[in-house]
Structure formats: C-alpha cells, structure tokens
Image (cartoon, rainbow, N blue to C red; front, side, top):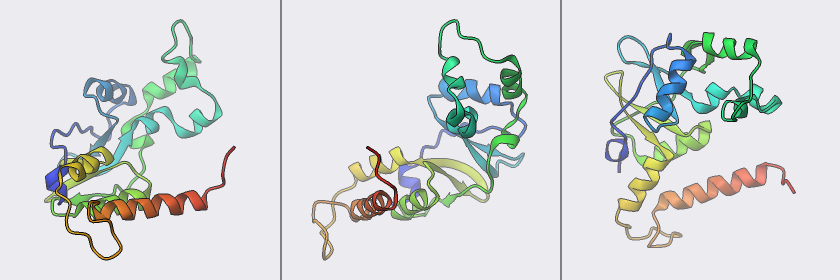
Length: 179
C-alpha cells in the first residue's frame, strides 16, 4: 500500500505571507490541524500546525492560548498584536519532509516516527497533491487485508504494527518515567 492509496487529496494550503490570524481561521473551518505552506508554484516550503500557531515556547511558559477560548478573558494587547502581525514564513520550520505517491506506507510511518511529525505532504513534479497523516495510515491499515505472517510476526497483524510497537517501546525506554 502506497501514499496514493491513503492520502487525503483535498489539500488546504497557504502561502508564506499568509497571516497567522488567517491560518487560525482556516484550520477549524476545514476541520484540519495543519496546512502545507507552499510557494507560487505549489511547491511545499513547510508544514504549519496548530502547535506552531499556539507557540510551543509560549504554551510552555503560560496558558495564554487558553484565554482565547475563555469567555471574558483578555489577552495582553502586545502579545495579541504580535500574533496577528506574524506570517507563515516567520513561524514555520523548513525544510519540509515530503513523500511521493509511490512511497510505501511503512516508509511513511518510519518518517513520521523518525522526524516526530504527524503528517507529510505528498508531491508530484514538485507540487503538493495530497497529505498523509497518522490517521490516514491507520485507516489504510484497517482496510488492508492481512497478509500471511512472516517469520516472527502474527499472521493476523500487518508487519507495520510490529514496527510501530518497537518504535513506541524504544521511545518509552528512552524517556524518563513520570509519576
């Protein structure tokens, strides 16, 4: 199974000069949590997620973004103005990790785990034509017929689940336990 079998083809993209305020409106309107940032030829520059809009450092310091959801709460005017004045280009990390239509879903899962990302744009001729998210991978695996088991795997499980289990267990062993 490849990217073209599981990708979401309705892609909502933004340009690098799109304001963060406009992006914050588009995400819930389209029921998505991230958008590719593309240049004038639709080539991907970066991915911009809700986490990028919230600001990881700011979210770690305080819960200012929760005030956006609270009734009657006021935000610091300077902070709010700085959010509106920013553009996609200013808050995204580049380069973006991409895949082709023919990339196997096990390779996509490996990339998501290796780069600690939740989605990748699918490109053809340098242009974004789709997105594969973790949810798309799971939907694809749920549709796929189980293959006869390879040595050491359960015949009813897809081999990618064994790989994902290993990635999760390795990550758990590497991180300190929290009470």
